[in-house]
Length: 384
Ligand code: GLY
Image 1 (cartoon, rainbow, N blue to C red):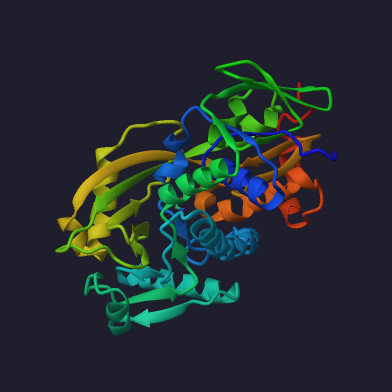
Image 2: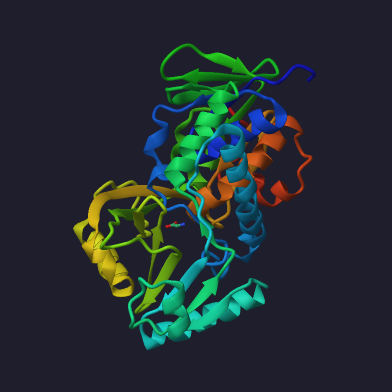
């Protein structure tokens, strides 16, 4: 293909926006983004942790490399958006702390530290005095924790807006419509939006999040492998008398984990529940109470802050907790299933997907996340 391919990206959450940005910026390929309401999904509810250490989980060691690469790529992506486009993603360094509240939690945090060490991750155990110096907002009851200096954060809302804005500056168009159906036609794809007429594209990237399986024409396995994992998140506003913590804080209290992310802007995000209850938008009082109770236990100053928002989002889960990335048919590419790591991974999966659009099969690293691993066992087959 000598001319620039015509590319549709279905979904303008942070994954679709990142793919559109890399396509336009790195490869000079200008895509059309389709989304009825880009700022309504999980990208807006998330906390923005860029924390490959704090978010490393037993049994998900296969995600470590991509998470580390994503954290490194965010540094460059943030610099490009700032220096070349004048956009601020609210990137904040400083590291993360995983703190234990009770004695049983301390034993678990020590086990986690040994796990990090086994993975070769740079993480140090800090005792009370060092903790107080690092994060003065911490409760004096906290006696030990793990500090990981490579963990950082980004303001996910600002980053998402920035990626869309920079993409539009580069010529990407945003069509405010859902896509109802795709079908193959002469060396490409017919894309049918809900609003407006169908158009032809050479390539289609599906980045429509956990509901992507609702698009007619995708193979059946797409809807059967994606499932929503509900997360309830709280946003507070810090003030002079109640300043925001400066690090990403995770805590463990009686086996329950929460996180608190304090931004330079004064926004403080507390998360999150993880519930296998399907699509249920109820902002549950009990969940709000539990999140606030556990957060106040670690950072008592949060109690003085203004309660701004309570939100519910749906993490796009997959059976192996790893994303679905890559071509599943000629010119049809999936960029789905980022589960708990949507904001972190956006920096690297946007780049990989853009490479895959331009040079299919060239990127070796993406092969580990080939959607074909599910195609046979779960209603695979050709696109109909
Ligand atoms: N990565 C944070 C969450 O999934 O809640």
